[in-house]
Structures are given as structure tokens and as C-alpha cells.
Image (cartoon, rainbow, N blue to C red; front, side, top):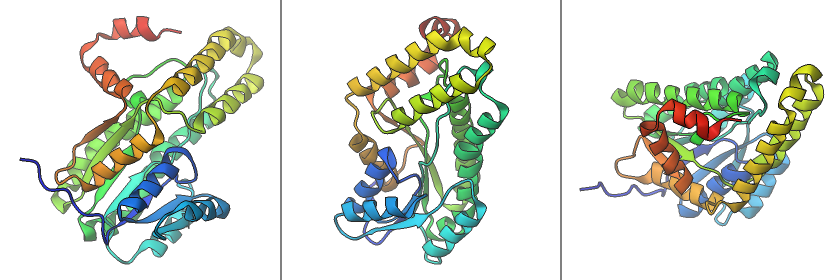
Length: 283
């Protein structure tokens, strides 16, 4: 028998990457169901807009770039010293491009934001989470299960975050802190505009003799991916509701899928041989 859902009333959650898109929707939904939400944003004006959209006055913006240790420490000071129920690690970027064209500095930025910065935030908030016997929710994606061409840097970060989540879940179990992963499939959000902009920057500043090898297939990939996102029936609200479940299920799952395509990707990753996947996703 499933355990009774846990009430959000009186519980506090930190939600990173709440300036737009999935984070914006998630923070507002958590507030709607009763959580006190500390919404991590990088600009004060984004926090003000989020507060204006909140329905119950339970959203408090916190300025925090996950790659800046001083801002992380300040955020912990603002949130504490009261025990913390949840930490939703949603902040991240996606650097597109053929791996041959992704510079070491670009790869470091991808990993620093989506992996190293995430762990820094987790480490900083763990004393408050232990005190509240709370929950960590790490947001990844389908690219944490199957890597596709031209998003190799992002997939590397997502695979790393999946592995980090497994290790954390096992290490933190004795302290009563659970770790769940939320894996959204394709959802239309502002990330696609950022992805396209960065893609053209990589093509413009890379070595011509290399970028020209990939240009046509890379641009086709971007167009096709954006079209698939626009046609997807999965919405940011669906993601937000799954995050609520991860924070309120009486017995939280280790992984939650968002969208039919994500469920399909999980099955493909388990049962389809690599060579067949290569044929399906080859550029």
C-alpha cells in the first residue's frame, strides 16, 4: 500500500534556476500547493517578476548563480537556519555543437554549471536538509539516458548528474535525506532560443575547416529539434506537477519521467542495442 502523501504546509523548498521556463513553472506550482519557495534567480528583476506572478506570497527570490561560491553561501544564510524540506536542482545550461567544435572552455562551462555547481549547492544546503530529513530533487533529461549527436557536451553533464544522484541517494540514506531524479522529455521553453543563439556562435567562431564539415547536418538538427519541441504535448505545467510529486509522495521514487517521449527513451536505453540506437540517431 502506498504511503500517504506529505503535506506541503509549513515546509520550505529551494528551487534553483527559477528565472524562466521549467524553473519558473515549478516554483509557482510549489507555491500554489502550499510550499514556502526560495526561488533562485541570477537577476533581481527576474525575482520581482516571479513574486508578481505568485498567488499566495510564499515565493521569496534568492540571488544565486550556482557557479559562484559567495552567492551560494549567501543564499544558505538567507534560507537558514530553519530546517529545509526540499532542494530542487534545476539550474543549468545547454551548450550545443559537434564535439569536435566544442572548445575545452565551453565544456568546462557546461560541466561547471550543470554538475560541479549543482554539487556545490547540494553540499551547502545539506546541513539544513539533514535537519529537516528532507529531499533532493535533481532535474536531468532524456539526454541523461541516451546521448544524441550535437548535444554531446550537455549529455555528458546529464549522465554525470544521473550518476551523482545515484551515489548521493545511497550516501544520504542513513541521514534520512532522499534523492530523486526528475527526467523531463522534450518541452517547449525559452531554452530553445538560447540553444539556437549559442549554436550559431559556435559555428561562427569555430575553425572553418571543422565547422563546415558539420554545418548542414547541425542546422538540420536544430530545426528538427525545435519543431519537435513545439509539437510536444508535454508542457511546463506537467513538469511542475511531477516535481510536486517527488516532494510529497509518501515514498518518493528514485526517478520520475515527464512526458511519453521520456518514458520511451527509458525503455530504449534498457532494451535496444547500441548499434540500433546508432542507426536511429546518427547525424
